[in-house]
Image 1 (cartoon, rainbow, N blue to C red):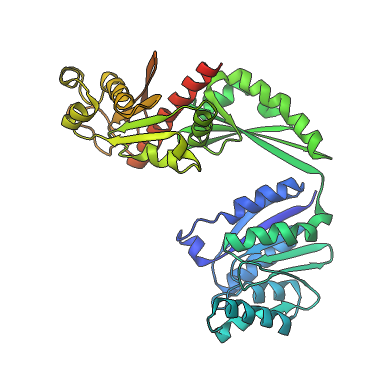
Image 2: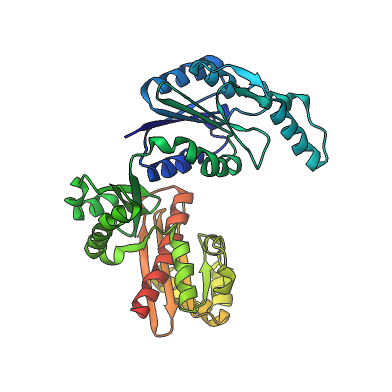
Length: 414
């Protein structure tokens, strides 16, 4: 099996100024070709450190894919350093220079002369056309090794990889790798792993647990000669996991809980409305991040004060007096109230203490109640994160509120 290392170039990545999504994209795509990515290396725009990183990567891997540093400025050094390390001389290409001039011409702007730096290509190498920018990608092969250099912007890199790089590295492919993700809610990674402990020992397909914010995942990965064979290997394992984990499973290969909920609402022609205190509009934001959510989302209310909870949502004064704003009773009345005033099929609510401090009554940060109200149905869930992390608490409680919707619709449909 061919071994690949991904080399990300850019000081801005090391400083955390940008999120490096290229490594994830490339790792997933290379796995489909049966090419193992064993290392991700990130290096800044420093000639000596880049030279060392490129040399080390080429010494221990069959394929090295470098991203970033193909721009026209002085700190864009990937092309020069990597080609020198690999032993390829750079030559000026008049045809690529003309392509760059035409790119600026179509935009109606003058081309800075520095952009001609991007017209230098490795003699004996392969040039990958950039349909979304000025920097072409480059490919080189020598002594059984392969070096690919791609632009850093994902909207330039990803199309170039799919169109040009895949055919270029196809000879290194070793079978097909297929992966699926079982996503769960309201069960911890360790508890999930314990239930599926024997499956984690499998070699093909493999089963690996992961933790995300408020969720736990199992990644099932199979390798076979064909995609169909790999899928057939994964299928019974996925079914076994679903049977073991039951209602904790909210989706297979779902991107997130909001995507799953919007899909279920659409399938069942149901609408939803939200009433929030500590999350302050976070749930509608996540719902409407999903394309087409306008067909299912009715109304959202942010009701921080008790007076507004009473006036807008109809929460009883006696409920707030007896149980407080942070209580299951208040959460349930908020959900019922928002459903009534919006006319939606489902109302959900969240009230609690996002943190970082406890409230006046001593209730801790991370104690949050979420509730759902529908025709003939109401339920609440208690979220206790044990954290003083405001963003984490808001995100997790929004997820748990959405999970109540998922459970309700699946039970109703079933």
